[in-house]
Length: 455
Image 1: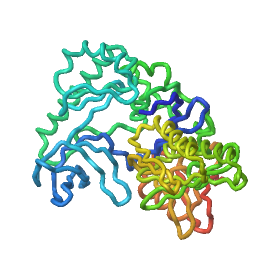
Image 2: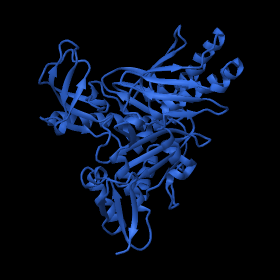
Image 3: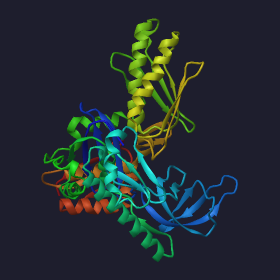
């Protein structure tokens, strides 16, 4: 769970849902995007069929519904052709399949339930001594399975915990019933939509601003079973882009830049390769001044932790701070990074500093990082993907007011997305604005545009 007290911005458009998480100073902590034509499958439960087993690795491939295949890391005890109840734990990434597990976890806001395990666990940061007394009142409900008390569950009344446990237990019974009656791979429980998943998995929420009225009504209903969110979900009535709040729009775009300036001088440079993420700390003017170098390095560790979470960087990460000879100061950098990463909800391991002065760490990979999601490479140039540009044009069409017919002028790749994968979103946009959108190809322009053309 994300533990920092935050404000959540949710924007719904015909092509996608975008979510921004801001801290108390409205600094962007996380940014999420989900395309309606390609939603995340994380937490979805399926009846799958084990189609192939790799005897060398011990893993195998499971056929899901709609002809999709996922990777199962451990197949011990299973045979090819066997039907299995599996849950998606990682979406497909680049040329890698989605990853599934045969031990599903049904998550609520207050607790999570693993029906095939036993016992009681606590999420990181949950005070066991304050919660354990509550659990004596759930013996009549808690028949089988392992429950995990989540962050908001520490403060939730026992009635809410009991109600959520009953709901999760019923959901598991429904999953089993569907699995018994199905003979072919099939979806038994769809993945939650991104806005609901983020509200579920965020510990402290000060305020939720929703830019779409229909989505607001849907989300406001969840306070019936997550009452701690009552009064915190609000409709953003301003006609401007909801991402203007806290300047979230420019903040997420800045997260795509290679260089990040540091307050007080210096900068960090982030380079992503197939093998690892390399982060360099640099400040020419601080060279030779040990105190200044130490201050910049310390500031860099906090900013690096922020950028790792914001950009969703994962795998092996190597950090090259400005060289320092003082052994105490070098250790201090590693300690600062460890403390800064404690707020991360992913599994991380700060491996320490090498003899060469490099800090190595690993971070659990879940989903694509921001540059993989939004950037495409053309020769030596890097730019927003055609899908991202097309979705942005549809958002802008909803806020275009005045006489004339909306006209899009863009590269053929963008127009192809509007006529292909995002055709449903285009139709929804035209329905909302009450008129069709003219699409014109112009491969000479570098920036797509939408304007109102008088007919």
